[in-house]
Length: 267
Image (cartoon, rainbow, N blue to C red; front, side, top):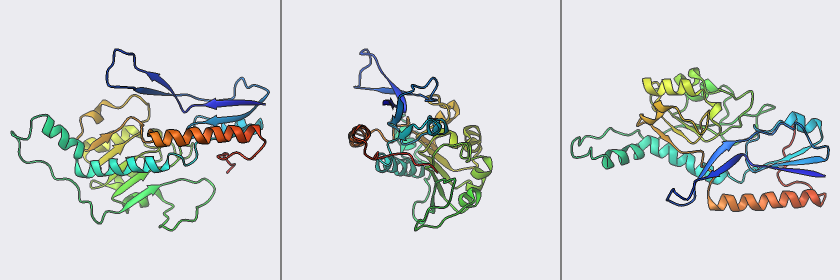
């Protein structure tokens, strides 16, 4: 029996000439079972997302797939809240304002957005059916955006969700609305997002993911209503320890002919 351990990204460490401690740069990898090993029976990925794995081909060949499941959920949620607050209160912009020496010359600082009474919505996507949840469910993404002040994207990247957040959705979110994306960059039409941010069609954005990582549109660098992080929401010591334990447990289960702990189920 064969096992493929698949990282979501390939880390490249900086050389010793760079100070400041360990630094990782991440590049996406893809797994397409070609050419496959006849003995391959399991693919284990360290990511929660599985858009880099050909699940149809794996199932056709009888190859089980296990991922990181919900290991990263708490830490990713923390960063989503951090991005949200930063965008609303312009914390990073204020930091640049002070460090850039602009405060003595320009005492008036732009007002931030209100925080109390905001309507927050999370975008999740299930192909088969609605999942039973305690909060309000809206099957139409444009209506959801129109009824929200903040739209948090936390769905998987699939053929159905690619560019799901398009210009129509962004315009529905509106000039006072903010977008937070901690899912995958390609869920959002990045060109339309840049256009709407530049023209003031939406109020701001907090982005941990981008469509062509590690490349980020230069236009976003110049906008004070945009806060960005380098796809690092899950990178905490706790998450990495929990991930290590889960990966080891999956491998132990596989070689002991026991159920996998984070098997990807068929929809």
